[in-house]
Each structure stands twice: as structure tokens, then as C-alpha cells.
Length: 325
Image (cartoon, rainbow, N blue to C red; front, side, top):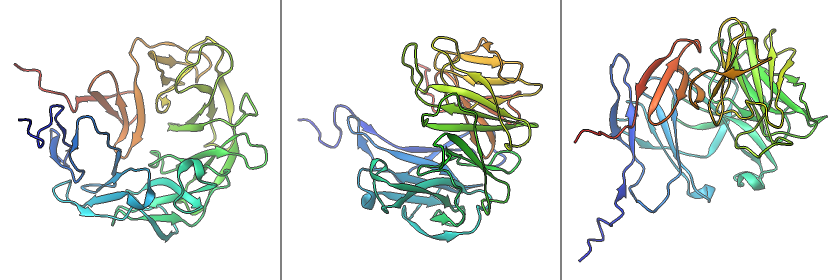
């Protein structure tokens, strides 16, 4: 007889990988997410909120049925959280994550949401609170989850008057925002803009559908550069029908002396002149995002790298199966 408790397709058991402060290796700890059969899907999100603190959010089609769990001790124990946005906060505290939810109508799905708002996930209790001061960036602002190395917070969206791509920056923990419009190559609304801050430079990669050439995933329309902290912008690279890079995974990686890396769908590209021209770097495709520890790069398989400057990387393997016989 078939044991219904052990289906042929097995179980998918969720775990959390934790690197404790001062530790030399990652450890796997339990997750509050339920076990699922191998053929069942599960949607969840893990947010780091400072040393030992994290939030797991379980997705779902119905907002009222979503769940969340919060840990203060590096995943050794979890308590039930609240996925709803309750209350308002004046500023973004250290260790917090910036995200969005639906402001009107409240609790609506993404496709049904008329207007989104910025929401702060607190490192103290894992609760969501609306940010009191919202940047003027159209109906669907898209924030970076964490601050850049200089302490600035960035949000992309559209200029409410023209509908063209724009970004907002806050240098006082979200108490006030400055909005600047990008010199987009098109007046049509894009998807979002990925911002990366380097030493004395800011790059903004404008994402959206491309005209001409073969269709691609994660299309990058243009790469903009600012040398005055985002007050003014210059378009350095405009994507054409065939000239690469035409795509971007994650965010640009600023380096010293005009160096900037683009992790595209097919491979990695490097520019040595601030984005005017690119050539293959010799590396494979990479996905890079900003984390509280620095830039996190994911390459083929289970290989990762962390860097504080986009130049020197500490590489490690994570979530790899033991291939030893």
C-alpha cells in the first residue's frame, strides 16, 4: 500500500540558512513554513531585519489569509507576526526594510490596486507601518529594500506630470524626499529603475520593454549616471535592437574609476568609461542586489559573492547538495 504520509514525489521541507555574527560557516535552522508535497507550490519571502532578526512572509492569493513569522534569535525560534500594515512611522529605523502595499483600495491585489504606498517593516517587532512622508512618484513607487552605503534611500517611479521615469532619494531616513526625472529615451512608462550608489557616482538602470530586435527577459532601456548625488542625470547608455547589454539582472555594480558591471541574461558586461561602452567581462550571467552586508551576487548554480565596493568579492557556496557518494 502507498503510505499517504510519504507521497511518491516527496515533501518539500523549508529551512533557513543563518550566518551568525562571528561564525565561519552557514547553518540550517527550522522554518515555520509548512511542509508541502513536491508537486505543490509555495510562495514566501525572507527579510533580514538586522542581527538575529528576520521576517518570513507567506504569500497567497487572498490577503486576509496571508501569514508571517518573526525571529529575534537567528531563527532558533519564531513567533506569529501580522502581515497587515497597521499604524504610521515618521522615519525608517536602522535595520528596517522598505516595501509597499496597497493604499487604495486597502488590501487589493497588485492588479486591482489604484495606488501603492511605502511601508516600513520594523526590526523591533517585524510589523508593517506606513511611512508618513511619501515621495511624489505616481501610483506605483518601487523602493530599494535597504539603504545604500551612504545611508540614502531610493525609490523609482514616474513623474506625475509627464509620466516619464523618475527617482526619489531621502537622506534623512525617509522624513523628506527629493525627486528627479531621468533623461529617458522614450516618453512611454517603463517598469522600474534600479539604482546603485558607488563612490562619488550613482547609476540608474531604466527597465522596460524594448523596441526592435528579439524580445528579451528583464529588458534594460537605458543606463543613467549622476555625479552630484542624483540631482542631475546624464544618459550614458541607450539599448538598441541588437547591441548588448540589452538586459539586466538585479542592479548595476559600480566600481572605481568609471567601472560599472551589468549582469545580463547571457553574460556579464563591463564598462570602463561610466557606461558609454560595454564589452563582455569574461564572466557568466550574475544577479546582484543590495543587502545590509553589502552587494550580494548570485552566479551559476549555488555560488554567491559578497562585496562592499563592487570590486573585491568574498565567494561562498550556499544551498548545495552534497555530491559525495
